Image 1 (cartoon, rainbow, N blue to C red):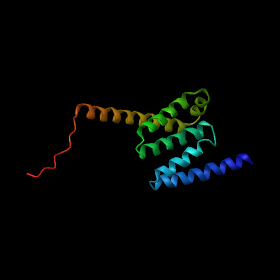
Image 2 (cartoon, rainbow, N blue to C red):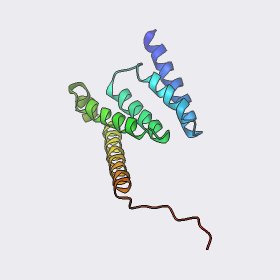
Image 3 (cartoon, rainbow, N blue to C red):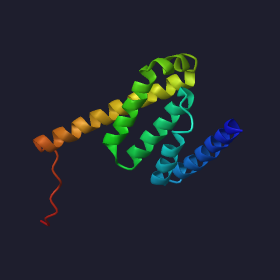
Image 4 (cartoon, rainbow, N blue to C red):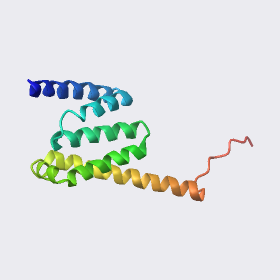
Length: 130
């Protein structure tokens, strides 16, 4: 009975979170995805849910937390238990690759922003009338 209950929690929760995400209600999607994380500890569940959590964090402007979530996916994938699941699934391997790429992009963007702020490379155009 517990397995049936877990199945429906996953299916319904994922459906609702995806709907919120599609409707740009990222905070609500984030809350549901975060709750869904505890339902199943298998790599086939954890990796996609963590990825969705990171996407929501990114959309909410929480870039540091998003990078941490993407890094958590990498740590999870490098764990003993997850390696076998990843080897058996092209989908999980693909999600892992996307997470790695997004984390690298966020790190590069952060480095660029820091350089811009540090060196004053970018200045706002003046609004003075001639």
